Length: 134
Image (tube, rainbow, N blue to C red; front, side):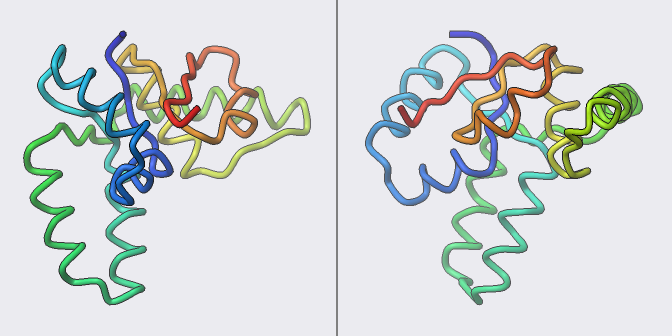
C-alpha cells in the first residue's frame, strides 16, 4: 500500500460507516498513522455539512481533520493542475478546477489518488488511482 490522497467521495463513505472503506483505512493507518486529503476536499466536506446544517457531523469532521494530514495547494500542485487542464482541454475532455486541484495535489506529493470516481479521473494519465470502495 502506497501513500495515498483520499478523495471526498471516499471520505463520505467512511463517515457513513462503509465497512470496506473502514477496513482499508484501518490497514492504511497501521502503516502510515494518518490519512491524507487535500484542502479542497476539506472545503467540499465543510461546505456540504454547513449546507445541511449538520453541526454535530461538522464538529466530528473538524476533530478528524486535526488527527490527519490536510495538504494545501502549492505552487507545484497548481502548476501540475494547469498542465493537466491544458492537456485535457486539447483533447476536449476538461475537468473542473476542483478536481484538477485535488489531482495536482496527489501528483505533486507522489501519492496514489483514492477515489470511487475512477471514470472521471482516469483521463489524467499521470495520476495513479485506486478505488477502495470495490
